[in-house]
Length: 401
Image (cartoon, rainbow, N blue to C red; front, side, top):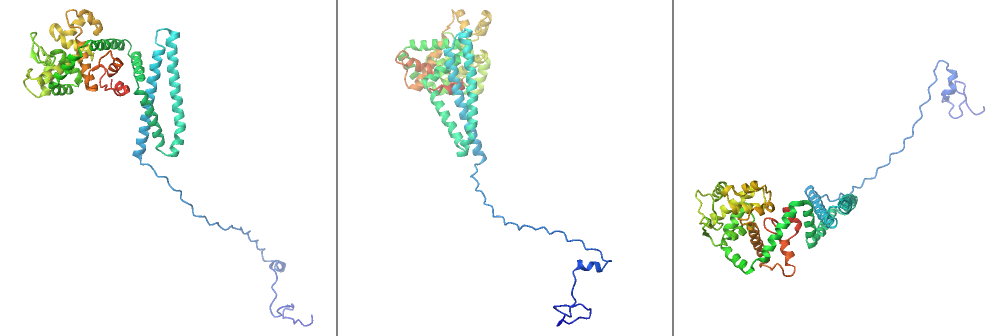
């Protein structure tokens, strides 16, 4: 070709005549038979560029409640719901006992059993609904379930403070107590009737005269775990708070005759003295309280029998021997055999004790037959039979009982 010089190898290079022209290795492979073919390069994987992660936003933690506060809230919630349930159960069963009282199977027993079953199902349903509602309440604020439970308990407590609940509680107590409770109610009305027949002016003077001996009697009652009003009733019946030595051998405030040896020893230990002086009102009160506690233990906690045994004393084997002789088992069955003994002694003691309780609560002695005083006096209760009752909620009195 004109104008293009030739290089020594005889190949024309149009660009650079003096630079050898490099042939493609594939095209030149036939020219080199001894060279092995070069394997193809592996395919290159395209890697996607990593996305830069955005900084995570930290969630704001809710204010955590300390463990002791959470435990206190759960305890309050459980206690409030339990109290409300108890009030509801007592109210429903008390009403049912009134509605279905009787011995007929179809008219009384079966409907009452059905009412008990319905009550159990209703409580199970209410509990299920509460557990379904509770997470939603706790989501609002953790203390909300406890607050709502306390409000429910407050509503139940309002009902428990009413007269209607007292009647429901009495009906349930009669239902569960059976024959024993029926006897207690009968004897209680004997005490109420004795108070109704009392001369309130004489009782007023008796209470005023007793105040001189209250410190000694309160101390002795606390030492032997006896209600003060009950012990005041014993002293009132024994000596009318005129300590003296009587013809039958009784001495002092509680007219101690032949106190049991264990009672004397117990009084001596509590007073921390080697010699008892029955002319001393404090010593006399301790011996009287120890003697009553001794007979109450001997009579297995029966208040009427304990008072009767206190009055009879240990002579001729005491009350226990009389009951064994005639086969009597309680105050009702022993009364007919006590013709020569003051069988109304427990009634008189408890009537006086009732007067002391009324004086403490009301500051006066209400007449039984006026207005609604009868129901008020019955609700106040008899010392020893209704311990700890102070005119407040009957539920607390029932639990103490």
